[in-house]
Amino acid sequence: MQKLQLSLFVLSYLLCVGCGGDGVNRVAINGQLQADDGPIANASVQFIPEAGTTGDGALGMSDSEGKFSVISSRDGDGGLPPGNYRVRISQMVDGNGTVLPADATQAEYPDSREGVPAPYSTLESPLQVTISEDGGDVVIALPSESKKK
Image (cartoon, rainbow, N blue to C red):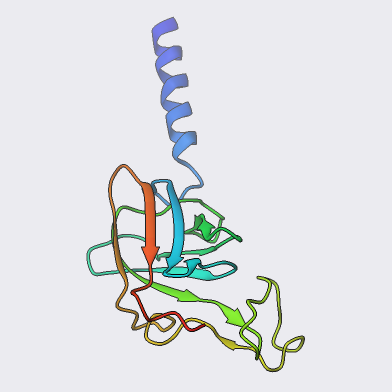
């Protein structure tokens, strides 16, 4: 009888642990955005899954050193599923080219513009990255001469 109770407890626990999640396997990454002139600060980064990659992609925001982490679900789950992704980078700059804070609005800076040139700032970005089953470090570098000064 005691073994049956223990078995039922373990089964119940395992079922509850699985409840509430979306069932998507995610791996942690340490990301950094770079350009020839240094890190890409205060930029948004979007991971768009390619065919065969599970999940809906991921979003993140870089800090002053270009480092970022990502969120890949509406529940705020960190990391992203292993697979192949197209990467879009967007960074807003003022009319004089000064990088704007991450929380800047168009109303506050009416002369702001996209600081990352097309196609890297569009959904058709040619930037690609493969996330392994182990996750780890991911460096996304804009090709030379692509970053506007």
